Image (cartoon, rainbow, N blue to C red; front, side, top):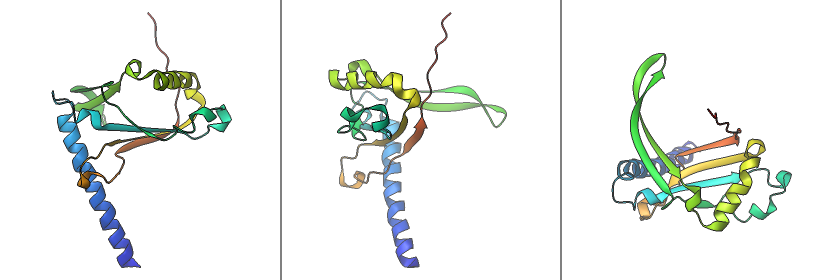
Length: 156
């Protein structure tokens, strides 16, 4: 029993290490002029309560991966931020997706959901698309689940 658990843990650990290496490579290369790596960012979104919101039309697409290709831009930099009560320089890497650049059906579906976001249960995860055999491990490097809140903008 213990050997099986240890073996499983080692296998999972090596898969995670390979994905961490892929993510490290992506974050180094994603903002260079070579856009091939940036286009490998993959997002998976899943609405947990489709029936509650009468969203059966989304079911075939729910939880399916989406590559953020030409609609995505990467920004990196640093800023001053309070960390544990101390002002520190914090580096960041940000990827934004321009929904207006998506095809009509994807854009229309997303825009239709925006008013419902504040009451929906949504799970979102991210990974980098693997292309070589050692990259095809499928470990997610980030994710979140819960209810999204209404975004409020100040107008001055």
